[in-house]
Length: 189
Image 1 (cartoon, rainbow, N blue to C red):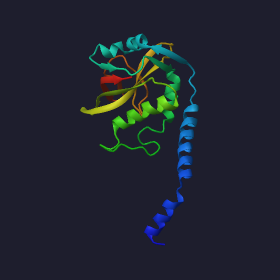
Image 2: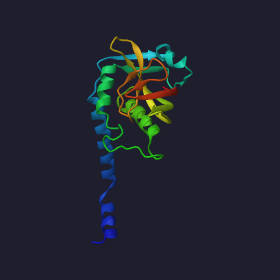
Image 3: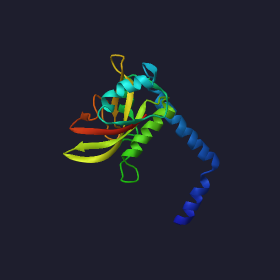
Image 4: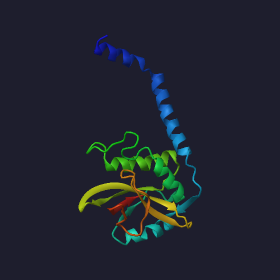
């Protein structure tokens, strides 16, 4: 069988029912993944809680935009656990960085969308800023997460899945982890 005939035969084999089954299986797999991480603590917060935990960043010139007026937040312990197994981190599960087609902004958007749609939380915020590594400054997009700290306080944490970074509590707009620093310029929560 020639390559063209083989390709035509293969295309005939994928039916509409197959496509529906693939879509259902994909959705179910995502549901199942996120169900494996039930939060130990949940809380619904409003704008005043968000502004209090974001205050150290805002006073340093950060611009802040929001799409909601309430946020469902989870405990940082469960956030750390899901980050550990996040299949959408760079280099895990076949997702790689390729400028300009799928790069940092895509990793950040994917994380935010997956959490909202499958983990039932809008606590992940999309950030724009810079990353500083080896004395080089590069534009970067990443996430922050609003979570319940170990002391039951509402806190903001750096959450950069692309660089597989542990959540770092945000006390200013220049957090650091493993010789890398992030300059946060704007957040959309």
